[in-house]
Image 1 (cartoon, rainbow, N blue to C red):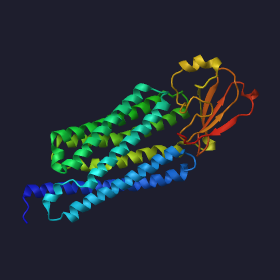
Image 2 (tube, rainbow, N blue to C red):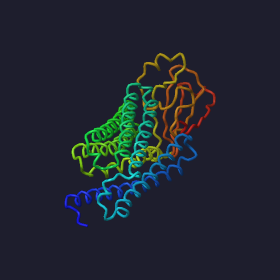
Image 3 (cartoon, rainbow, N blue to C red):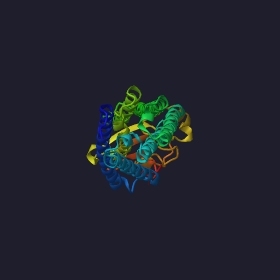
Image 4 (tube, one colour):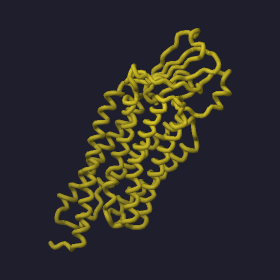
Length: 357
């Protein structure tokens, strides 16, 4: 059967973009598996069950999206071979992959909203903005998925309502990712003390935050631009196929980098900052202090870290205590709380709550 040249070129463009996107996404899926293996090997006994469950869910989502993409490509290349009219139909597997990709993005954004809520000492404005854009991209993404199921054709995605939903989804995702990156960089920057070792560590953390945020933000921006500016073309597909994999790998990279940031016993770096969990005699000073690098956990004694840091607290009760963050081994950060009269203080107790959410 003769196929018109314009139809043939459209089919070739669509299949080419799907093959490129599938190749890139499966490569990222392999990296996800490797990073997940490293995570459970290094932190499987140290992190709390909520974090480990989140990683398991993200791996499951990545696995299912890869299977669904393979099914969609097999349908277009093999089952619909010689039937060009069938290639304009959106398969159920492709629509399902879009839904799971949205879930992956929302989980990633909510996780970092939680981390920033702790790290920023409950900054309501920043966290509310992040959650607002996360809800927007979830809602627009769900509406887009419903349209894909009901309208059932790729041509329907070129209509103005579908392009508006695609643009809203990708735009809100990119803004949300940018807010997370900016928030992390700002509060890390606020923790500088002038100590060379500590400031170098903070620089590395800022670089990691920027690199992670740039990947997801650029992918979403390209998805939005190609969807809105080039309707009727499939150039956005590679970026759409990679999104869930990028979110999973960005989160896993953040968790797995903790050991790499730790220093050996011979290269201990210490940071002394005001203690935000001061005794009642120093509560006014603690309240007025600006957010510092050292405070990640809740306000209760012995619960400083909720992302893999060891905690050591002193029972001394002198006013104006200080906090020392000591990067003392390849496997743990230790928080040492002491006072100027620590020599008279009783033995300290060590509490390890690695990874508890």
